[in-house]
Length: 133
Length: 287
Image (cartoon, rainbow over all chains, first blue to last red; front, side, top):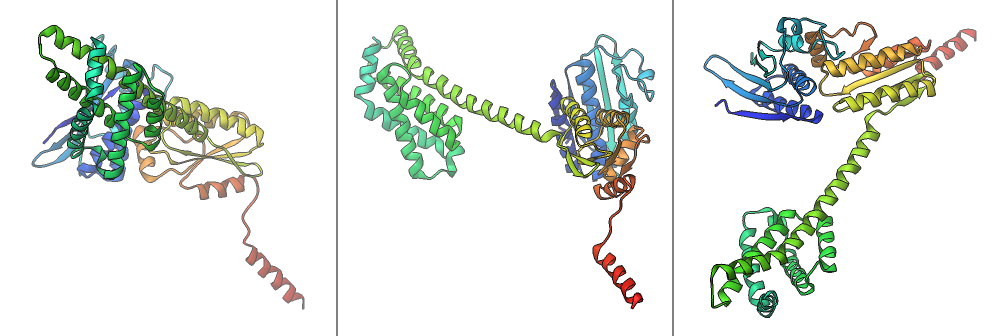
């Protein structure tokens, strides 16, 4: 059931493509408009991080359909420079690009589960889940 | 040698055309041209094959080909109709030439392939160029059109200007918004600018950041910026993201924003009929 669909992030407009696909997926799972907006925003943040800091990468979506609960899993992977200090980027207001610095902590608050694995020099993988309530 | 093959093809053009038409019609069952009427399909096929043979005759790109492709591009025929057609022409012709020749060894075979390729490939190249050229043209026109739409500024009243934003905001558009906003505020001498984001599908940190910067810049040149059209779900995501929009006023709808813009410029809306009633009352009391 949990087939995967991915969007490659190479140009700025790929962020829009990823967002659209994620929103459609969330809609078909049965999320309401508020959660759809949350999921689309989270995808937007993750995709923009890939575009800004790693250059290229991909965003994948999985439908989770278990006995007890349904949900959507978003996996963002890149082969970029990686993140040296994860606790620092998870702080509100920390940004290396002059942005608001609300991206990753914001995604964590928008979604229900959030895992980040990063190897400096190798890349970053972020897995995040939103459960359908 | 090449001429020999050409003669075989030209002399037997009827047989080849017949076979080719058969193939094309066979393909037709499960594809894109199903919506096109049988008559039009047949006449286009015949014209297409005539163009191919005209090209063959001239040993190069015939003017008929240009006319033909231009018309098909305008009518919106799929490119695959033409490429499929040429591929079946290649297959049919090679088959036919080989069936006509007595000796069939590898060098002869490769010669036939080579010759037919030289007929078909230039036509395919020409077609693909024509089609992609027209697509590129359309895309560039749409980009210009989109850019014109991307950051409009409407001076609705003295000192009040509205910028309605619809669709996705990327970095390029964000720059345009900032420029147009500041230019417009100076040009229209606006005291209050309303930025309407009803039509913006997602407000992430980047979009919020650009809006905050634009509002700050407007504040620097002495005007007030009101952010309107914040839908409930957008309000929730902004709170979740932890974005601080507290520095400038926000309203849920353009209407409310416009009302507070009027208040800021010391004006308010008066209902004319009520005003008349009042005057009549005053007149009545005077009697």
